[in-house]
Image (cartoon, rainbow, N blue to C red):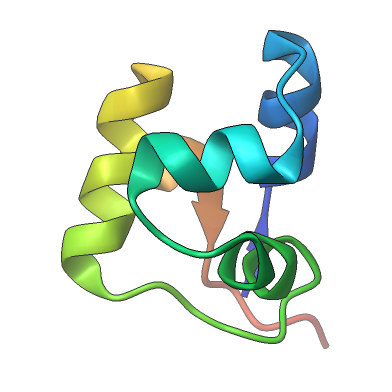
Length: 66
């Protein structure tokens, strides 16, 4: 799943660890999310959306490229 996490994190000047701390996940989880190796659970997706003040659909793109 494509997402804008790295971009949004950069806009806030946060490291992966700083974002992980705010989301109560590991830095490795943030890295896996940003690289598309891991799709967030629905509760985590909602926490991310709330943190950045955006709808989930503005952060995560579930469309398959083809």
